Length: 81
Image (cartoon, rainbow, N blue to C red; front, side, top):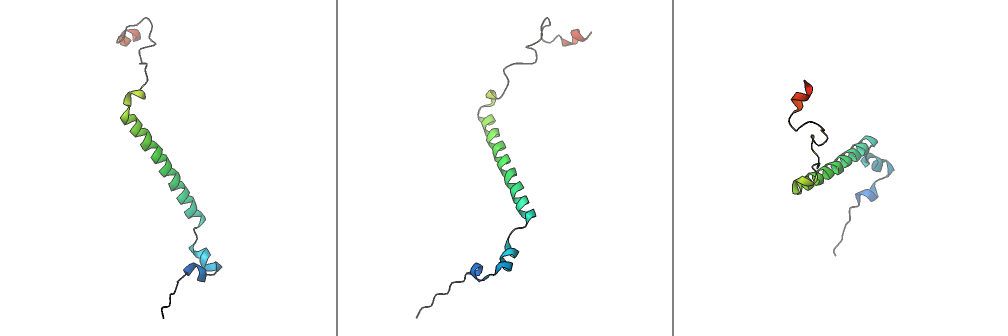
C-alpha cells in the first residue's frame, strides 16, 4: 500500500552531533551584540520620526541672549573691548 517515511534528522543524531550544530560562545555573543544594535537603531529611528513630525517641540524655548543683562543683543563685540 502506501508507506509514509518521516525523516527526523534530529531524532537520529546522538549527543556529539547535536553539539556540533549548536552555536559557540562567540557566535552567541555576536548575535546578542547585533540584537542590541538593532534595538538601538530602532529607538533612534523612532526618535528621528518624532522630530520630523514635530520639529519645534525638541527645540529649547530660550536663546543664547536671554541671560545677557546690560547688553543689547548683537553688541557682544563691544563687551570684549
